[in-house]
Image (cartoon, rainbow, N blue to C red; front, top):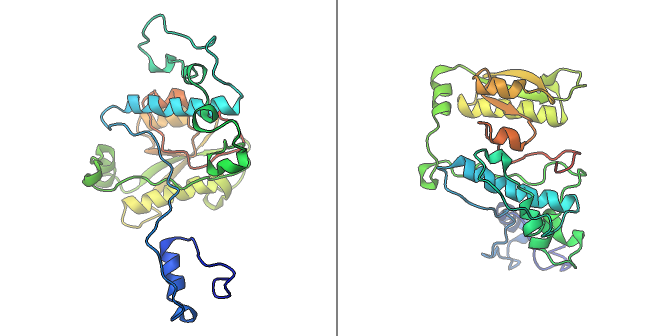
Length: 257
């Protein structure tokens, strides 16, 4: 289409553009790869890394905004509640105050006239899609403030393999080693993690399975029986009970709840 004059520009990943521009049929046609970059990296709230609990509070305030829009909850000062006493347990915070006192995600970020189709990636997930965006793990050196991990160092120094727990549905039947879908993704994540830790040895992993509705995987994680859980649902209670969640990498058929 570019050669035929049906379009006069292509928007793509930079490496792809260079590959197209270097093709034999493109030589001498006067095409150039521009230096203007358009990105779709999702912005977020940034906190220091010396207070994980405070960072988690920020995360769950954002989740409350999403939940409010999905459930049709809007700003309502009659439901905006003040605290009578200061809570010592962060799980007692009324996160929906973010919605009732200020507004839900749509009220804060968009005009009432914006249609869902115009919001694109910023539409609330209704369970009709899978992975929405591949979120990076962050910087990999001290320049970005990443501190050495005591757990990571211990695993690499003391173990020959990583112990990885995989969440499977209650009714799941089959060999997880050849599983597909979300279970297969979790198993492959365990292998990828082993490869990263043990110089490419993706078989340096011991996989244990746990069902969705039991507390055993989090107990096993806490007592060191396993080093990581793959496929666990992100939950507020566990987030403030000594475990940490990665950014969600898959969105299923459930609601924001």
